[in-house]
Length: 442
Ligand code: ATP
Image: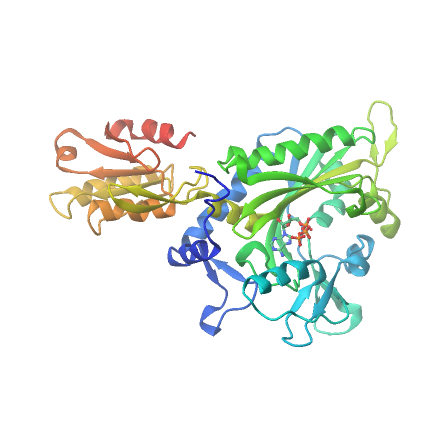
């Protein structure tokens, strides 16, 4: 099947996400709040797994990257130094008839949609500058001296801790500092579900390198970040790089690439990889009047490292995994919905079913559930016929179902059923962990 043509619609994903408890509109009983969403019982498990997969690959499996968890509210001068106070603007336009507001770079898309839906053309007014940062006050006085911002990106927390990390660890160039956490942007366009949110999470890493080695490392991270999505099962046909043209780059930026995914609304950025030169460290050094340099321990030479920044939105990654995993298949004349999530990301790794609600099946199934829970998140379900129970687990991406039946009571074996191959096997309870290890691949 053509992976591009077969991408599911957003309505399908939004409906599944809500029905099965992945994502809910925020404060829904009050009518919801534009561009704010809540992760439900399954969504929160998926989100944890996505963040863990990133942390494992970016920090724990490497020798050259350390982690950080900086505060969301920082000194307001951080945002002066980074340029966000003066430059973090979108241009906002408003239609003089329907009053619809849009980012100026989204106008073409809106006009195309209006044309497709045979709606009348918008007449856009003059563009106005709109700062995306949320401003608030720290302390009881609401005056400008107490004004602070909710961070619009996690990266600056890394730059301002550059010296602290150097002084408290033994990192040597090239090295990275990684961080995951909430960011806030007062976005003008509030469409496309969790693709664009006012409150979202980012997973960013600043990789500091010797000047002159930046091109090599940019190429490395450009490739590594796309591979990460492939390794977690995302269809390669729906992933691509989009290299920024020279006129799209900021004056300090040497190169920038987006990793894009083919969503139901077309190719869109999920991650940016930027080669930012020594701009950020130099800006903070100038504004804070503190030296932000790396001193080579052998040559004693001082350098201001260059930086490569892979910046990923956690929520966009989750949306990518959900859209990509969604499949509708024919099975024995019936259609089944299956989320073919990578086992690492699946909210539950296994589901355990007693065939009957009597004859000791539930007790035995509970006993097995307790053992499996020690290692893997799993779900016990005794309601409905087995076929229905399989469907419910397929729809939420559970890789393995385990059924306890009459034979279990005689010889301590169970039936396992693989979500993707549908293969069923008779397995000894004592060998369940090795069977699960094989199905899950870890
Ligand atoms: P866009 O052009 O879509 O507004 P951006 O280029 O401003 O995104 P960056 O500042 O590079 O985004 O942020 C890095 C990543 O953070 C993005 O690739 C995206 O995954 C995520 N991100 C940025 N803004 C949002 C948002 N409003 N909601 C959800 N994720 C976001």
